[in-house]
Length: 581
Ligand SMILES: [Ca+2]
Ligand SMILES: [Ca+2]
Image 1 (spheres, protein in one colour):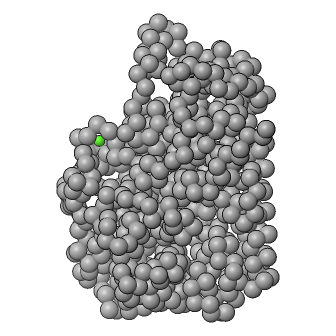
Image 2: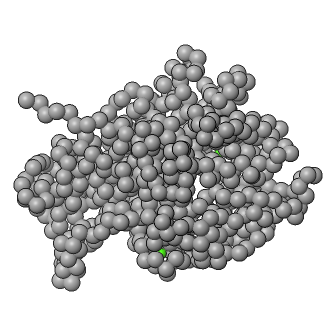
Image 3: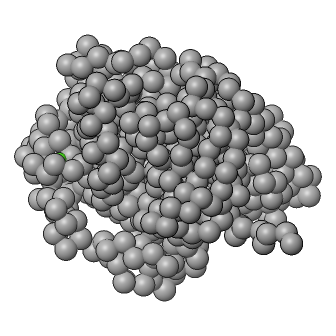
């Protein structure tokens, strides 16, 4: 969607041809957010330690210098092993297009300031879910050049041996249509769907005005429900079919036996199965349905009975999980797709208990929650306790005074911990240790920002918001690779994500609005990749190649926090303070 500004491209080519280019990052200017800043936000760019001492910002067109400043001290950011100096141009508050100049850098850095800096990003990152819908054709009027035929109707799915029960013996046929493809592959996984649906609905819950104003141009647009809810319903309706009506247990996933090839959805014809029920899937389902039941309660007129159906599904799932507290999913020998295996289930139990308590008000859920003993951590698909704290903080008015105080104190203190790591960081990031660079590190960073925002919402302490902004800057280009990690956004976006439709559709540009997993020093795909990782450093372990499922895949649970964080910053960033006279 965004194109490379021609002068810079020409300069980069000239430098390369002349053998003067000392690296891509130099030719492109300094690593900075390539999408834009809100006028009131904190603004930084990261410069090489030898870039000089001073920077200036010049207005594009007029050439006027609008701001001069001194670079911060050189500091080494351990995950990249690089020394950087930061340019802080937060004093820039007038919307417009600018260039950041530093004497020792051959190229200027483009900086955009706009009051709706993230509107298009929020819409595209949400529309990415539409592009990953299973079981339906994407029409040209909604999908443009990424229109495609329907695949994976999932109206005739077989109960796998691992999932056999008295009422549904092995080989039973059932229908389990709709849902989103999980990632670059075409399977549908309950565990990963749970945190994804929750995060999107939390974004709606916390920033409804922003989403009410949105028109995504999806088939349901204009039907009386906000588009974010329409999109989430596509997956919620699938999730409901994954619950066994006989006992409330939830099948872990709907899957082929092996991954589909690099083909379009309609070309993939493998038999699909539901596999064994698991405690993790059933608890994640219970939490998600209990939360969704609250969210859809005001929409009784548009969706009669939906809210109560969701809460009943949640309660039935909870009961199954209490009777079956430790059923850990492992792929049977004939199933070779993603496992989403998780043997540590106390966090799933806490999250489900918290959501059911908030939805029903029944005291026994509060007892099962054991709030005082719960840790607080950055959420991820296998560790969801952070989501319990997030919901409890949002609805602390429903809690006892003591519980509300505890939640406030713990969420704020976690925010302090993340903000302190950010403040001490050479790159101004809470991503400080190699342990932060997990598979899907970009989403881990965004979920750090999500937790910072929960703390900011409690006390309005500014550095939490600035730290969250830094994370968004990071995934949009302020990183050592100068890489925007979102397809279709920024001057250097991913061009070859590990995403079957993007690879097989014959359209040069990848499907837009997807964030890729990002740097992952595990480099688990190296054997399957024809290109080498350029570095073993955590923050540099990234390849923009379709082979790289370990660093360049897309996934629904990675896109959801992008939607959330971009929406939160767009909605919460205060306008600039008036200049002092
Ligand atoms: Ca867990
Ligand atoms: Ca393509």
